Image (cartoon, rainbow, N blue to C red; front, side, top):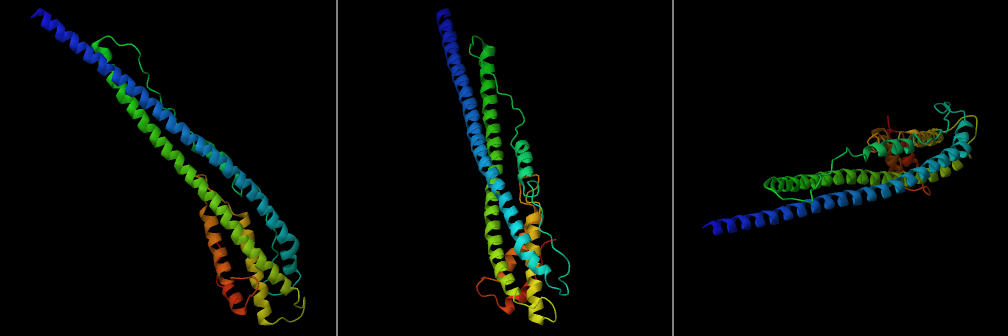
Amino acid sequence: MIFMGLFDSMKDNMERRQRTREYLKSAKEYINDGEELYQNAYEKVLRRADKTRDAIRKHVEYKKDISRRLGEKILPTIENFQVPDLTAKIDPPFIDGKKAGLTTFSNSFASAVCMNPIPIPSIMDLFVSEEDYLEARNQRDEAKQFKQQMKYERERLYEYKDRMSMITSAISEEHNQIDALMEKLDTMTGKMKSFEKSGNHSTKEIEYMKAIKKISEAVCKLLSADFLNDNLEISDHYKNIMEGIEQINCAIPSANNITDSQIKKIENINIGW
């Protein structure tokens, strides 16, 4: 009987040691998995951030070029005509990194991806007692929780990755919309130059010149609007102006055939706040 009791005790100890090894093995796997999935997500977000930052830098230069074109070609043409409601001068906007989103992106991204420190559970290597068995089980559970926290952090990073994709998509869409408007402005100002610079103008000519001014103001508003908010999202102000610009492009589908009825539609379009 003594021998059987001793044998049972040895068997229990062996099984307990085996379970302890399994707990520790699982704990290490949970920790390694958690660290790996977070690191992979972090590296992907950093690569996306580099591309997004580069896109915003190019976007700043694009805006500067559009502002220059407005100041050299479009706005001087408007100023040459003494027409009611056209007397207020429009200045080409000054473009800087803050308005175009570069400063906001750089400042907000660093704080957005910063993770509050999460302690990595420590895993023991030696175990000899009942207490070690219980501790190993606790460490397995803590490591499992650690992996879950890393999954949450990964999803948080991917949310910002998605926001950066929206930023680059918005930049591309702005280029498309502004390029289309500038082509129409070039065509319209070319026609406007054929009008008499002084004297009486027909109602159609005045409406035409007012449309040019309104479109120019819309472009200037968009160029000078704050592109991003502190959450790395497209600002509501910017979206509001973009909506008006899209309506203008819909009202005048092509620069090659601008009709009087299309010009009339411009009058009722609201361009932002």
